[in-house]
Amino acid sequence: MTNKVIGKALIVIGDATETVDTLYPYYRLQEAGIEPVVIAPEKRLYQMVMHEVRPGWTITREWEGYQLAADLAFSEVNPEDYLGILFSGGRAPEYIREDPDLIQLTRWFFERNKPIASVCHGVEIPARADCVKGRRMATVAKCQFDLEICGGIYVNEACVIDGNLVSGRTFHDNGHYVGPWIKMLEEEAKK
Image 1 (cartoon, rainbow, N blue to C red):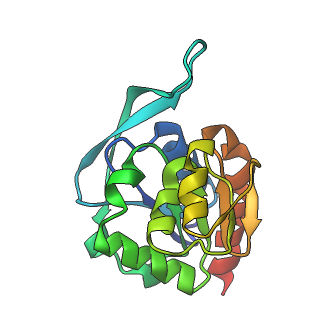
Image 2: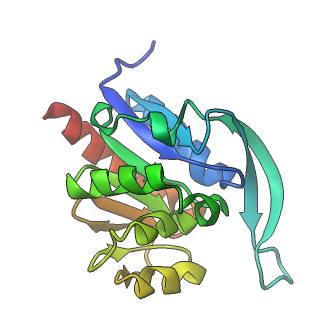
C-alpha cells in the first residue's frame, strides 16, 4: 500500500552531506505521503558522509556514506511547488552556502513562513542568507558561533520550534525534530 502524495518538500544537499541527517527525513517524508525532492548545486550524484566523535577523539571523524542523486539543481527549483525545505548537515553547507540560487530559495521560504527544518551544520545556510536574526535554533555546538554572529539564538535542545522553523543539533535528534516538521508540512498541504 502506498500513501497518497499530499505535496513535495525540498532536501538541500551537496558533497559531504551527512548521511543520517539526510536519509532519515527523506524516508520519513515518504511515509507521510510527502515526496522528498533532493536539490544541490547541480543535478548529479553526490557523496554523503558519516560523522561521529569516536571515543578518544575530540573532533569529528568522517567516513564515506551512501550516494544520493539530486533531483534538481538549485537554479531549477520553483519554490512555489513545495511545502517546505530542510537544510541537512555535514560539511556540505559550508561549501554550498555561497550559491546565489540557494540563498534566494532560502530567503523565499523564510519570507513566506513555510515549514523549514535545519539540523547540525545546516544552520550555516540560513545564517549566510541572513534569515536567523532573533530566531531560536538548535545546531551542533561547533556551529553556535555561526548562528550567534548572524543574530540567531542558540538553544542546546533536541528540538527547537520557533514559528515555522524546526531545528535539531545532530542526527541523534532526528527522532525529535523531524516529526514536528512533518506535522507543519501536513498543515501547509491543507492550505
